[in-house]
Amino acid sequence: MERVERKACFGGWQEVWEHDSETLRSPMRFAVYLPPDVQDAPVLYWLSGLTCSEQNFITKAGAQRYAAEHGLIVVAPDTSPRGQGIADVDDWDLGTGAGFYVNATEAPWFSHYQMADYVLHELHALITAHFPTNGRRSITGHSMGGHGALVLALRNPGTFASVSAFSPIVAPSQVPWGHKAFGAYLGDDRSAWAGWDAVELVKTASERLPLLVDQGDADGFLEEQLRPELLEKACEATNHPLTLRMQPGYDHSYYFIASFIGDHIAWHAEALQR
Amino acid sequence: MERVERKACFGGWQEVWEHDSETLRSPMRFAVYLPPDVQDAPVLYWLSGLTCSEQNFITKAGAQRYAAEHGLIVVAPDTSPRGQGIADVDDWDLGTGAGFYVNATEAPWFSHYQMADYVLHELHALITAHFPTNGRRSITGHSMGGHGALVLALRNPGTFASVSAFSPIVAPSQVPWGHKAFGAYLGDDRSAWAGWDAVELVKTASERLPLLVDQGDADGFLEEQLRPELLEKACEATNHPLTLRMQPGYDHSYYFIASFIGDHIAWHAEALQR
Image 1 (cartoon, chains in turn purple, orange):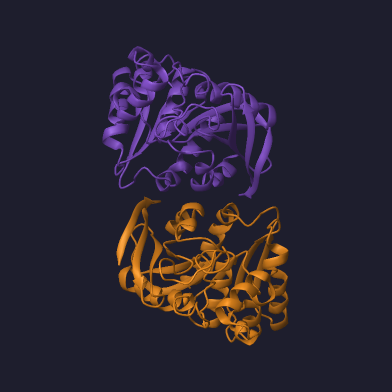
Image 2: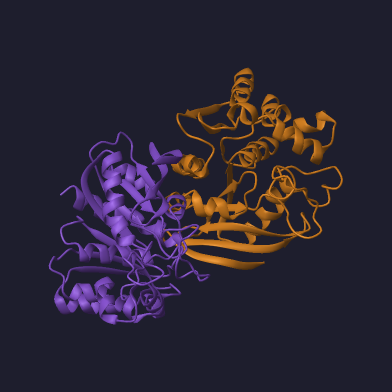
């Protein structure tokens, strides 16, 4: 594992590391923010959206200020394996930059696209081994990464102290982005999709982990791809705790994320210190 | 004048506008952040560094949070004229993206590269005419833009309520970046350079406007291009008020700017409300 960036930031360090992932059979980069005087700190995982690398969140969200204040380590992985010999297509919403945080079962994807296992197991083991964590973790993300955060938390009860999402794809089984990605990664049998769909997972969740979701009401993807009302309905039906905040005027950009990442980090810090 | 971007951000609006500049004889873009419930607000000008457009600061510095808190309008222009028919060279430190905030006197530059007049007069008139300002202004910037902020404030006593800079080129007459740019824009006669050099201007400043300068001590350009000790010496010699903060571990990046922009905005807000 090699450090490729190290920048002083809000009294701590914003770093980027590269390693050869066994799970993904790909070189991978991840970003890690280390707050000032870090020791025995909890970890917040951030999962980015379509087209992003590990860079978008660390350069645009302004999260370091809040992570420094609350003493959180923040880890942001890349959004897919990438590079020579790894399946890809020309589209921006499938393949490179669009791993969707699932474990693919279909050719040609399954030999590299195992992002769920990567984030949950390999990356977390690396973080625990190399950085001064206390073993506790929470998870959040944006759009495809909001989907990833909700799904990884709902599939793995007891793993995350808290979960939140910005403009998540809450029901990939019911929207075009999900149809395309799940069709490719998981195949045509839609019963396999339910295990990676937050709206479906909420219906059978064994743990009542509260969900915090922020969604801009001027988001151009709101009605066709994001559809937070489906999550609201599913949570109501099963009495799953959900705080859904429709933010007036906000769109799908990092200006939206920057405006509310402080709230999310405070929410996670509170859960992680409980 | 046409608005080309409008993003909700920290309760206000991050906008980008395009207009045809008479001063520069070029289409120009500038960014403007409007804080929540803005009316009769003072304006802080941000001047960016080499290679930047109006985008770098607004996407990476996280300034909107502080501008919203203090009720400041923040304006960030592009760093040069650019486009068809405008003099340029292949270098990143001359021509497009490298206007150096001077008024060029030499061919082929003088017909478009009038960035000092643009920022001081044309842009300020546009901002005053189109946005709810109270007429007061301050100025700050980074690297080449830190130089620009210091020079525009020192050349124009009574114009700015306050001035600050991040990692400024304090003595362009004495460093390679300045030699190259001033040689091209202002010609070989070095007496003309002194009027655009903060260290020289401090020596004869009629106004004792306090200077706030932050500089990372791990900045790769520190010793060859930035040389804050020259400003320190010049200020000591003439008893010009200077707060120079050497920030340990910080480099030349936006991670550095993001870490201290809150301090700078508070400093300017205080002066603008005095």
